[in-house]
Image (tube, rainbow, N blue to C red; front, side, top):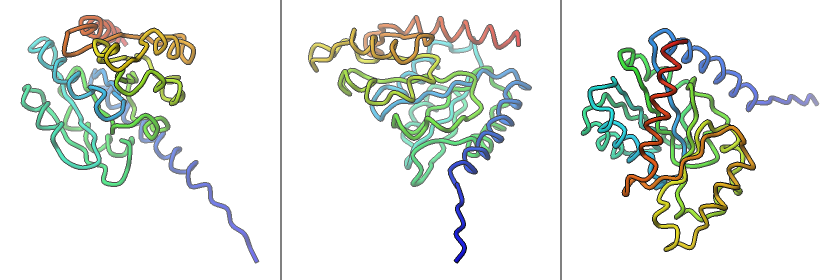
Length: 220
């Protein structure tokens, strides 16, 4: 009896890496800064994109890809702010992948900034490079102040870690300093922003970071 072992996971991830490299070449060719925004459902990802669209206005040609399992509510929210937007429904999949992005990005060849909202969870998106330039992970204090230490891998790979809804920390008995400390233990290089989008806390810091990285990308 022959025994055949097939490591499907390695094949899938290798195929994803090849497509991600093609995506990265496309983005570079068209001078697009692409940011993969990851985080659990309810962390504030869509609101971050909406407020960014309003803040940048006519200064930046911005696009957004909204990933979700089903539905198009996030797409409709962002499109109302006047930016080019595309919804990707993944069906049963719990993450975006390079193949899905590969089909979508051709519509964004005329933007300067492309924000890609990943499917809402802190586990599945970790292994799937989309071809992005930067990874942002967003959590909220309402998820509990142990959320970062429970999901270490996604934070190790982040360029920016946003701790959102800090104005609610006392009400939900969350220790923001602990969350910052947990993030720093996992990733010494990431920029950490304490934010509350409803109170405009930390949003200017986010915009400053965006402008900084876009300036770097223009010089690449």
